[in-house]
Image (cartoon, rainbow, N blue to C red; front, side, top):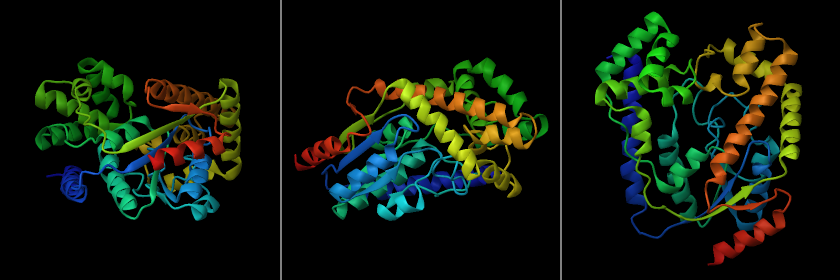
Length: 334
C-alpha cells in the first residue's frame, strides 16, 4: 500500500476510536449547553466571543477551517497573543498545512472538547465562520463515505503521471456539481470524489445530499453577527491591508521554503493562493491585493447566505456585546 493511502487509513482508524470514546463519555444523556457565535469573516466574532467568555466562565472552540493549521497565522486572522492570554482557545494550530482535515474530524475532536469543558462547568463558546463545521459539531457527522484503497491508489498514480487537471476534467464530466465546489488543484478532494463514483456509481454530491445529520447533541444558543454590507466590506478591505503590513507575504514565502506545496488544500485557500501568485511573479502586488479583497468580500457573502438559511440564529450587531451577554446568561439559567 502506498504511503499516502496508509496515512489516510491510519487517520480514519483514529477517527473511529474517538467515536467510540465520545459515546462512552456522553452516556449520561444530559445535553451540554453551547453558545455559537457565527457570522461572516472580518465582523469581529473573536472579540465578541472573548467578551462572553469573560462574563460567563467560558472557553472558546474555534470553528474556522483555516485556523486549525500551524504556521498559518496572519492570513487566517488567528487570535492575537493578548487574546489567547485572556481566554483559552481550542482547535487552533492542531495540524500541519499538508495534513488532511475535514468536518467529520472537526466534529469528533471538538465534541470531545465540549464534553470536557461541560464536565468542568466551563461554558463552551464555539466561534467561527465555517458553517459546515458548526453544523457537523451540533448534529454530529459520524460515519464515513465508502472507500476503496485500490481505486484510490490507481487515481493517485494517475495524478502523479498526468497531474491534477487531468483528473479534474474527468470529475467535471462525472460530477459537475462537485467539480464546481472543488478547486482544480485540490487533488485530495478530486481523488475522493472520483473514488466514490467508481466505487459506488453514486456521485459525492448525492452522498453528501443524503448525509445523516442527527438530532442536536447540545442545547444551543446561536448568535449571528451582522452589520450593514458596506461597513462590512470596508472592514474586510482594511483587514487585508493590515495583513499585508504585518508580513503576510513573508508568512507565505516561509511556508513555501518549508516545502509546503502551493497545490495543497490549505495553500489554495483565500489569501494564501493570492500571495503565492505574487511570490511566483505571476501577478503584481497591487492586483494581488485587489483580488484578495474582492474574493474575501465574495466569501463573506457566501457565509451570510449559509447562515441566513438557519432560522435558529439570533442576529445582532458585534458592538452590542452587553445585550449579547445578557441573552447568554438568560440561556444558561434556563
